[in-house]
Image (cartoon, rainbow, N blue to C red; front, side):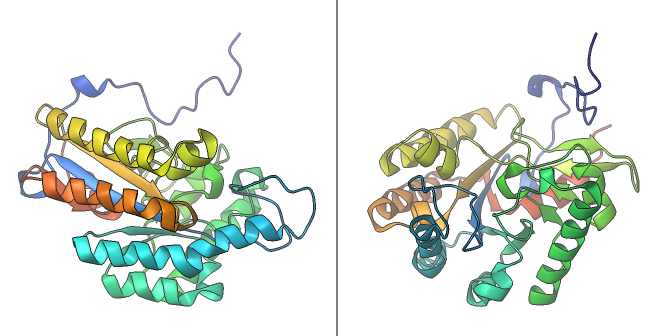
Length: 297
């Protein structure tokens, strides 16, 4: 007998080969975005990616390693994005507005998108009671709005930690899209319980993502850069048959490290040099807005 949770009931199965065709703006077929996770970890709490296991608090080793990303790595990345004229999306813990506001200002000055990423990466929001998760979604969005003057339209859960209610709570809080699901290469409408009755899922990568590859699978920076290049080359060919979204998920405490950075530079330069009229370098929010405006029947 199936259990109540045997299916999420958010969307139906749909093979990517059998959907209505469409294009991105100006007839482009491949939407590429760079997502940089800008995160804050509470000093005396566990959580998040770790360089090495620690059985005590405060965990100076892992806190300092991750803080390097905010103090050093992100500035290398922003310089590279400027040199390559690439837009980015900052997936931003709201606590960064209080602890490292210069980072928020730098992304705002570039005109990049700010995507809400909860309050900190020390808490798994999917484990919170429903009312507390709803409160966090509202308050973190408001903090980012106060800091930037623009309300975020998108959300990525810290640690990809959703509850069964998260899509409903996001729509109620004013978000128009989420990024937690890596199940497709095109946006997908999710059914929700209130408001308009739906919220858009923009694909977010768990393969072209430095945390699972470097921390989880122990890959070297050169291997990860090669994955970015290989994925882009295949998408560039396949987008002739169907439109595609390619996300690249980065964390400054990983690919912003000096010994890995040349590989990131090589990979993003490869994309820029190979890109033709089919490629749209963009942000998740622009992808969501364009897709939401399509009439696909």
